[in-house]
Length: 178
Length: 110
Image 1 (cartoon, rainbow over the protein chains, first blue to last red):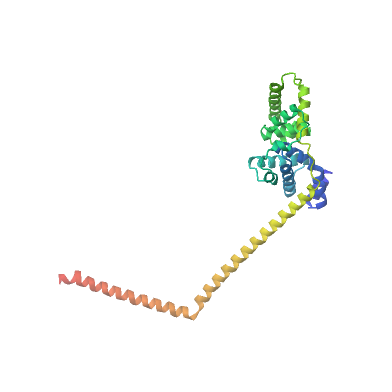
Image 2: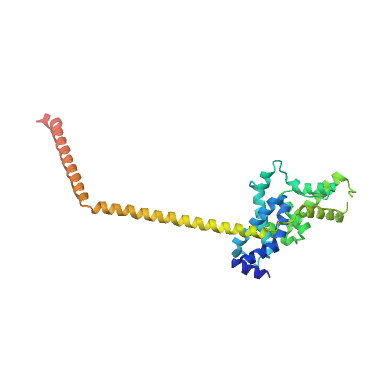
């Protein structure tokens, strides 16, 4: 299946491109949304990810990574670049009092809202690790490949982020929590 | 708080952060953008080719006009006149110089 996609994409077939976007789009979009925290920007960046992937499809090597990992690595690079040099997007023009946290829907639980805010305040790479581990269910080796890091470094980072978030929530709501 | 409980809470928070649906026309937007990039690169290629062609034509025209100028019969007449004029001028200058030397350096010794 993956090999068929690669052949179709290298042949520049619009039908295959469309099917490819439909298959991998939601995962890429969720990852970018987890990193940038804004729906419109996440969609714009998702489009950029696929455009870049199609342009560089010849450089994809199936022996090095799966297509998902390769796409998420591109997504990570694009999201990091966007967060370092944000471009003026339509969503920001529409809303004078722009705040990325207003874009995130919550179920109303104050503890979850607090935790989401704490995640938003984390550095982008830490947000990526949290997202890939807790939402995506990615393995540590895969996370390391996406972030261009070693597996050991990711393990240590994940442990530290968890500890930091746990301390934050315990200081706010006490050790019993909920 | 137990680690397990905390992990569940974290999982829920992260899931809510990324639970927004993706618009249906994403693939159409991607294909539109790819076509836009293709058109843009084609236009850049065309304008680059046009600029190179213009440069080549301009170079050929400059060389051609020089060649015409050099092979034109008037060019040699003009060049000969200029050369003769220079020879005359230099002869006059050297004659004057010799006179000056005679007058100021050689004459008093005689």
